[in-house]
Length: 292
Image (spheres, rainbow, N blue to C red):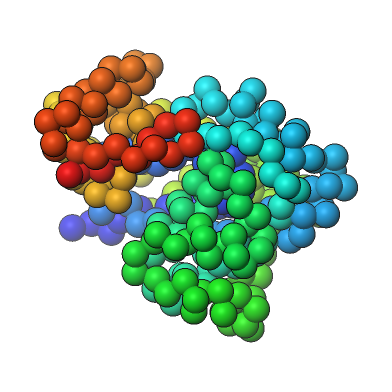
């Protein structure tokens, strides 16, 4: 088998753009499988909540933004104003701690924190909130993760992530104006993807569509394998046993450049639930679907 394409994802669990890109990421995982080798780099958008407060953010402004700007992308939301604005640095450290403790499980921890950011009012810059968000993630010791948050090993690894995320100067991402300089250096915004293969490096900075990602991969491995759309959504659920949202499934069932048909996807999933082949767990204003 040829060397896989290395995909570096610059992301932050508290970024709604990064969260809204999940349907596209699921399509890449389905189409290309082990031909893509994923690596998560935590941006650390804000170390403390005061940084957001100084920029004019409020709990109401954040909740309104989710409802007005991000509901159209289809990921689960529950835009209830929090008690206060929260920073993202500590939750990023938690993902790093999981990565050090159980390599590979950082992706599920990151996803759990994303769901918590956008479907709960947990204060995710406090240890109690982070522990609650990670409580259902299999394969990690939540108490050990919380205990490690302030250790030198986690801090060093987190700061390496932050430095890498702030290395976008003179990059294609900056050329496309998909970068940010909110804390000084030119950094990658969430979600930015860097694809590397056989000495070539291609960037898809900031928010992009699945079509953009697919073109990048096709150019890097034109002799690779590309799995098509399945006939039944149950095949998707079995391939993603830890669960998919309705929009993720709708995107996975989309053919060509058609628009995802969310209603049709949901109807087909409800039939699976009625037949006992799948389960539906409410999540925000949507659900997480799993094989029975």
